[in-house]
Image (cartoon, rainbow, N blue to C red; front, side, top):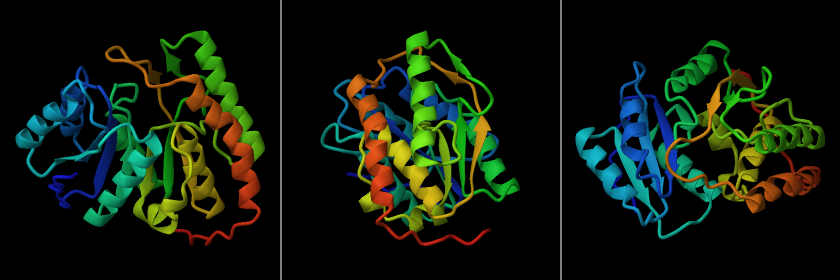
Length: 255
């Protein structure tokens, strides 16, 4: 269910999936609304029992036409949340459509830099990357840092895509990328979704760039990461690569 209130006066929107983000919901929306370069917000809430959606609705009243909410029946997966959000934002006419976590792991101010790089470098996809310039992760346990870092190395080796942070969830897409992809054919639902999106963009020949960011582990709320989600990312890439041999990709023209 969506209120469909997003305005198209701005050319950029950010999709923020939320589940039990009561501690962060209001603050992250306020932080995005305070940016010098305006971004509208689409929140996807998977029926959070902690009242996250009610907080978002208060912010919709505070920022009319700038904040929208899609409420879903339950936890249906990160990938399906983003696919639904992409379709919604495409229908609203945005040129730049971004992904961002709700927990301040990603600095909202970096949204402006992602969009600027897309414009200045004529990039189709800009990835906010933890690993393009070393390892820029703060307050993660070392085991998790190593798991994430070497998983991205593994994915890059298997798929051949020129992306250092393949599981990154802080990304800016031009609308033509999402229009070209067959979004309903994106299969993965967890963190492998992020890999599949980048892989598919590269196979279509879109210009994919990385911008170094500092990723900070959440302070409030509970992480949604688990070994099953991560396992999908590690083991699913072989099938992703194999299937690509039998698929034709429409080649994108340079901007």
